[in-house]
Amino acid sequence: MPVRKIVTFGHPVLHRAALTIRTIDQEIVDLARDMVLTMHAAPGIGLAAPQVAAGKRLITVDLSVGEKAEELIILINPEFLGTDGEAVSEEGCLSVPGVHEDVRRPGQVAIKGIDLEGNERVIEAEGLLARVFCHELDHLEGRLFIEHLSPLKKTLIKKRLKKTLENDGRE
Ligand code: NI
Image 1 (cartoon, rainbow, N blue to C red):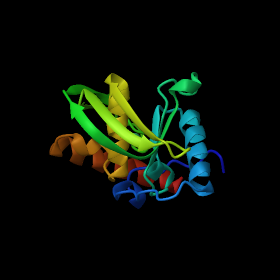
Image 2 (image 1 turned 180 degrees about the horizontal axis):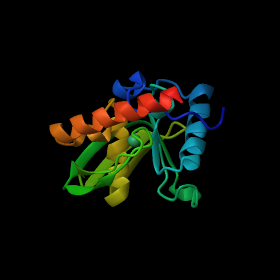
Image 3 (image 1 turned 90 degrees about the horizontal axis):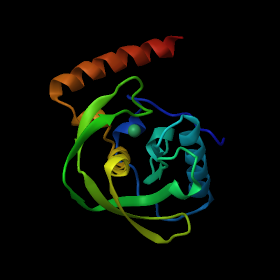
Image 4 (image 1 turned 30 degrees about the vertical axis):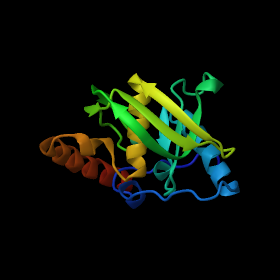
């Protein structure tokens, strides 16, 4: 199943922390491949495994959305080494359809993770790339970007999302 179904707000796997990957076996390689295909097909610039209902610490990022092979990043067990600064910009999420809101994030991040060959990778990023890393690492903690909004805004959006997604389910 190359392109997988993207699960949306309310699916339990999106709302709990993902598990550390201990072995890079065929299942993980297949999952990574499918995530890249799913991200490109959406289209999106980042995807975390919980979004395809896999509770594993794996993310894919590609600001070029498939245009430049060298921009594709696949990271296993990514974690922050450090963050700095602050930036506010609009975000959306394939798992939170129809919602776009300003979110405050660090301006620069350094993260480390493991690639599919088992090599440790350290990446320093700023701007949009830093934002995508923050967004995807949040997913691995079971946190959606709307959790960063004010309580009032969050409540309104959650109410709206529940209604929209319930209606979708009836069709
Ligand atoms: Ni997202």
